[in-house]
Image (cartoon, rainbow, N blue to C red; front, side):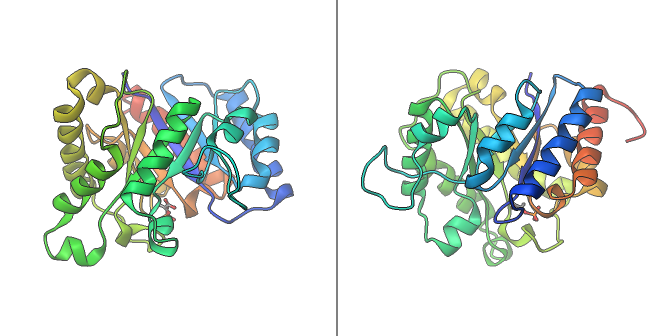
Length: 262
Ligand code: PEP
């Protein structure tokens, strides 16, 4: 019912030729492997989106931006609008990544504004939420994550549930090598799913993919994907090497097909 999404967030990594090389390799992999229930997605830097789209054109893969302006158009030097992204042919965009919250002081209200711009333009926002280490240690995980969900989705109507993706990314697990255990991640994913269910009803909540992010790598993905409310990964470091990315796609295919030895 929900696709498993293996999403690579490249952050400020890879130049033009490295992007090209990765996409060509990914295209070759996708030519050999096809599983409708798994969606590979990459989020290269803004300057390389067009080339990534060209190389992956016609293949079962998605290309995402890593951020978008909260404004529709106009005098906002350096910003990129949702309509501009749509005009390239993009399908997804990450919003509210913890690095944007931390280094650019993004608030839930601003993330909500970005989400609404994307929705209006027909792009699928990947909305990131997650607690810090101090908040987890203080027992505030649920409260923090649900406050972020409420702030980002305030008065946001959904029609199908397929028009947004949520990513749970505990800040203490991002780029640190510390992954939440599958049980820790499932607990929070379950809390997010319940919140979505109460807010939007069972049908819509059941169609929203909730990705886990935080030091996901080929060795720990299978256990995470086997959890009932984990519908994929938002992956930073381990998405940069094509071999690791393809290994994670293989894992996702094995999990959706129910192969026992993954
Ligand atoms: C991320 O960038 O969203 C992320 C989860 O990074 P990493 O996989 O490197 O922890």
